[in-house]
Image (cartoon, rainbow, N blue to C red):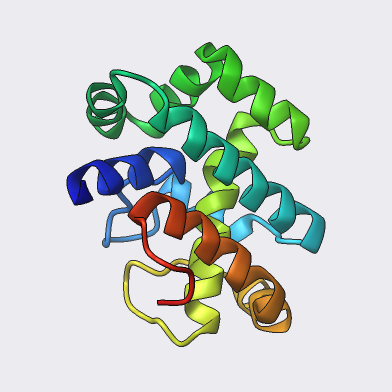
Length: 156
């Protein structure tokens, strides 16, 4: 079950492996992405719906493993081929690019706002300040999505 959850998390949250060396293009996009409350709310809600959609697929584990081995551009193309995923993004006024960059930008800004540091946390000072300002609102919502994936109560 944990294996399933980790794979689902990687796919649903638009996670890609970020090199710990100099800033790569995706890291640059994450740093340049500017969070707003409407965007953050859209990203969280879309992530919740994407999680439900991905976990409902009978071959989700195979799909997730395949997607995890793709480049960010290929991941985006895969997302664009999935009509249900595109409908979810459209319903929340998100493009595949914005989802792919916005989700990790939000997650890392929230992590940094809570004191998490390290080379795996890429967040602009503006987004960290935004996350600190809205932590009480956004963290429970983001935690509830993770609870869906990991099957644990929010906040633990």
